[in-house]
Amino acid sequence: MATDYLWFEGIPFPSYVQSVETLKFLRDEFVVQDGDVITFSYPKSGSHWMFEILSLIHSKGDPRWVQSVAIWDRSPWLETEIGYENVKNQKYPRMYSSHLPIQLAPKSFFNSKAKVIYLMRNPRDILISGYYFYQVLKLVKSPESFEQYFELFLQGNAPFGSWFDHIRGWLSMKGKENVFIISYEELHQDLKGSIERLSQFLGKKLSPEELNSVLKHISFQVMKDNKMSNLSIVPDEVINHSKGGIMRKGITGDWKNHFTVAQSEAFDKIYQEKMVGLPRGLFL
Ligand code: A3P
Image 1: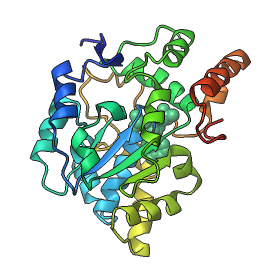
Image 2: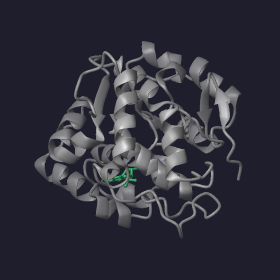
Image 3: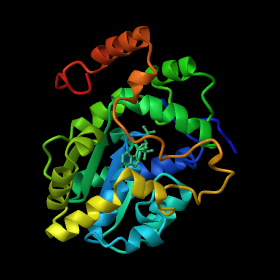
Image 4: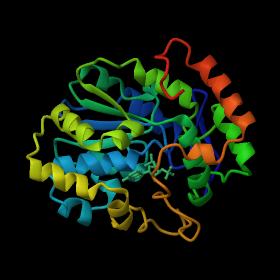
């Protein structure tokens, strides 16, 4: 499996992003439709949790869809070959996802009524989650050590580039009627309220019973046990299942178990430099 990066516009992409032509095509020619629901996120932000939530809002709490169709078919990745084919074959309204930074998102989105959900997460926890996941995902170069990956992330050279640029770009859409911005931490703090707000945004009103069923099926343990959601059916050539998987811990603040005091201070310093002008307190 190729683990070399594909570079485009100064951003390192993992090899599962087909080619520079794919990225250009998605940005310049892909047509976003008004009814589309697109989740954008930096990798390791809790994207699969969001897909499960959206799937269950879509099915009004009925678990049969999430139990019978693989998660990558329910909300395919736009920038992968298989994902793109799936998006093309989806019935309307379509639901799909992407890790693309805003400057590489399809231009047609900006003149559409498609709905975008941008999912954020504390970058320190994203770093930890990526550090473990890239040891099992064979499509990405495995971190040499925690110190090496820590530097790579802060230099903006982890898969899909700088987290700081990614979030700054997408936060510029804050306040737009068709853009819903939410964090992994908010989901943890108030899952029920977050789902109510999301379903309102999507125009899908849930009854109390439907909402309870959504809540039941998106818990960490239920997702971890669902082979259609936990990536256990991904072939061994892609994920080294003996070493771990995507459903790792599912908590907030795990970075505190990993960062040294010096790393924490170094991270905060760069964070403050890179996030100048953004709301104070966001992940500080
Ligand atoms: P950890 O590695 O910190 O455990 P992504 O889908 O963007 O790759 O993000 C993966 C992260 O989301 C993992 O974080 C994973 O455990 C977490 N996650 C997935 N489903 C979850 C759920 N139902 N509840 C909480 N966290 C979840």
